Amino acid sequence: MLASRRILLIVGGGIAAYKALDLIRRLRERGAEVVPVLTRGGAEFVTPLSVSALAGRKVFSDLFDLTDEAEMGHIELSRSADLIVVAPATADLMAKMAHGHADDLASTLLLATDTPVLLAPAMNVRMWQHPATQRNIATLKADGIGFVGPDVGDMACGEHGPGRLAEVPQIVDAIGAALADGPLAGRRVLLTSGPTHEPIDPVRYIANRSSGAQGAAIARELAALGAEVVFVTGPATVPPPGGVEVIRVETAQEMLAAVEGALPADAAIFAAAVADWRVVGASTRKIKKGAGGTPALEFAENPDILATVSAMEAGRPRLVVGFAAETCDVIGHATAKRARKGCDWIVANDVSHATGIMGGTENAVTLITGDGEEEWPRMGKREVARKLAERVARALA
Ligand code: CTP
Image (cartoon, rainbow, N blue to C red):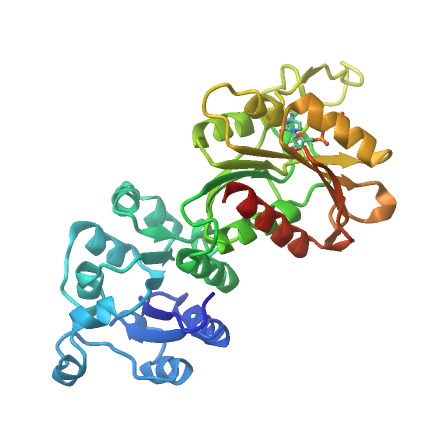
């Protein structure tokens, strides 16, 4: 997908600029051509020599370099790429973009281009959260600019929160998704993934062993086939791929609200391991040991998200796919589940402990459709995801 694609990579200023060097390597390994642009700030963190050595070509760095203008004007430079990627994208560069400034090479290229643009922001958490930055992000999103990250985590400045540059594989995925022109181009696919957490009190919750690995893999493969993917995820241990819109939720009720808010979609795939029950009247204070004895928990049934969407009269996605995690009589239970929930397909799998599937890297599934069952051999979750994405593409064709 990246072979022979031309990516104009703008490296902004910031400690994360060093990761742009690895990004260049990974993109070139996949056959992409990387045309690097180093901002003045970027050049404080990585040298033009290392950038051009890795890119295998000259680095552009100054708007008023007359030799560059003679060889290739900035307008042409901005339009000759298949995609413009800014990594790291600083708060300052995003502010310039949002307001249409063009006072250096990077901002001029970004203003002059008609090529899709993907930003990988990196900045201090307070800068990210500042209303000015958030306003600029909203403006840029409305302008059709794509984003990957930032991640949440420890930062070089010692603070913690959102603002870390997305990991390089995530940026590569997002670039692949932005350039994808596969059979799902123009299709919107909604996907739920991961476990849900149902609170008992502010510090305790009921969860399950889902890692979110299968859902993340499906999201990546759908995006690789060109789909616009909305990824509604509970607190999973496997991070979401780049190139998809991520909506994070905790509980089943939040997941249903997020799904309803994300519709309409051409297809919806429900890979989340949703908790069947929630605790009634979860305590707002930590439950203490002591006089009250052992606490008794009362449960209420959670909404069934898959069944709710399957039963929608208006706006039901054309294809609704559920998963059935079973520990015995897998096909029997899954076939009954397909009928009970009203979905089009069920991906059935055996999650009994001995299979090692829940939380593992492999999966053995049977696809149950209106035409019968199809047993797939045991394979990696990524291969299962690819096969499923291809089937979805065929169904929506
Ligand atoms: N599901 C859902 N909302 C729920 C429960 C399940 O959307 N509240 C979806 C899951 O994402 C999956 C499918 O329904 O696609 C089946 O989930 P599973 O846990 O296997 O089924 P349950 O409905 O929980 O049935 P049971 O407990 O009887 O196995």
